[in-house]
Image (cartoon, rainbow, N blue to C red):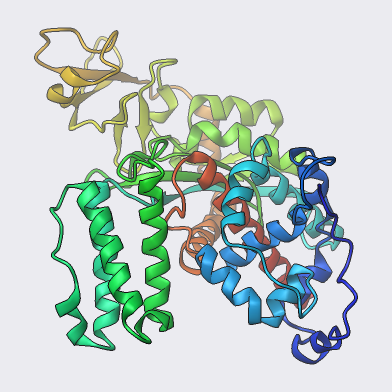
Length: 482
């Protein structure tokens, strides 16, 4: 059965909040700013209303997720802190003497209660509405667009390697307090045997627990809790080395990452108004239409879009013309002439194409001909093509090379070429740096450089809560500046 959290419960100790939680406390301000009842309305259908014991109010569970994102805590440490941190209890709508949830409830909440809910769009739209209500952003907006990447929690390493690395972090933390403990640790496991690594980690944690005082030291306990979560993931069958939805993306010809991309649209007031989470290999430009439509659904009238060359593809030029939007994105001779429905996508950071399987081209060669348009030919690793699961229809058996050719039509897109030479284009383009700063804020302040869970669904929840927190902090800052 579902309980609805209306307000703080009556308690003889309620006055403690007025003494301890200051009026300008960040969590108190968020409670005053946001009516969280929309969470209850969105999630109530995911609960049974007639059977079972009373469930914790979804608003409170959602607030736990916000606290986890704001303070970068594990589930266990988050619940532990909510036992004694009065600002946490106030934010969660609890009486000072109330008991807290079991940390396992957070896992169940994420997996069971948030399914079939478009949390990312819901939370971004809510913060946009709050900003509009307070007169903090202009309805007629110029969107600044870009993508930011997040490394997979497990990266492209084996499960055993990752477990061993976290075990090393635990050992190192204990050495700062007692170097003699190393003599009690079990023998290190084989590098690539998952079962041995799991068994080793369990023995390691058991040794730390038995050492009086060591296991309760916060620096050690934090790393122990994280290691314990990883071990449990392995026991439940999670393939740590195979994040199911993470893919390899490329930041340049020589640098890559294994994980996800979040495509963002932001206003000049530095509020994110739409976003889309994808696997890491996806190109930026193809999601512009979706970002614009989501921004319009949030209540904005999009007058301009500011982005790098990734957004100057032909489809985006057509979209901008149809919607009478100024597209402030410099033309790229390749992006403007992509062939349709091939599955090959241009990566502007590496300046090379990526095949449907996510493999980056090894190199390129341009040909200039008098009788026809110039062409650029991209070469792929034929050895990868031979064993690729998507080779049917792409790779011809016995072929000694695999190439992908595009035609450069420099005579097209004259209107955009003329626009990018104007003073207006240059003036609008100056604001593009803002989204680079916002990407840095998400990663450095809110831990968005790395996924905290595996799978696209987990990344979407992380993106939703991270952007919600970042937007609320920005809104409070804008209110203070008024």
